[in-house]
Image (tube, rainbow over all chains, first blue to last red; front, side):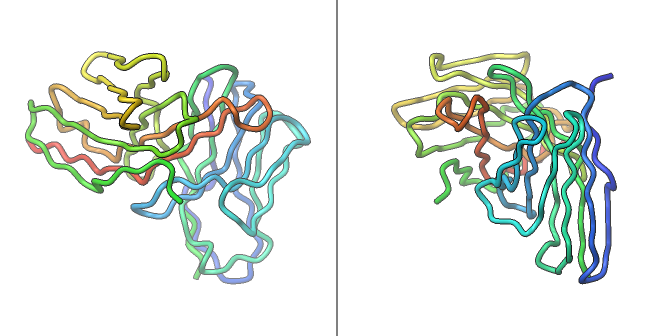
Length: 112
Length: 116
């Protein structure tokens, strides 16, 4: 079954640690996205990719970085986590045309 | 500046009645609109969409209405069911995004609670 997977679902980590949030999709989509969402707030685009070796920053400034070495994989890395990074991170992908996004289940990150 | 606004953070309706969720936008270049539904601890799931060349799109119990002159769209759920209780996000996109991709701009969501 084609889908998009995010791991871990929940992560509690100490300040200063390096973390990588994983995102993989099996739909062969070229375009992938990372959104950040705080409770009661809109989803903010922080990174996107239109294909392998293509990455761009989104509307919301983020200290995280991303890579796109394989079509199916779009990991997000925080080199030094801080409490201000506490949020939900949602990965999505999209195909051609007007089709909407398919979202993963998200990673709830808490930095203590 | 928030280009997609959902001014009602929450809405409660009785089971069997109609739920109406509203969304306003400011960017006249938006030409495609979507509604997503989100349960706690899960990612948003696509619900229904509408192109700017239409003013109505219906899919089962869900209907989306678009009023371009007012830059307003609404989602109607009839009849509402307790399983519809979730956060509903309105999203919009424009074909004038960079590259060939469309990027979605989301509203802040409305928590719908359907009471049994």
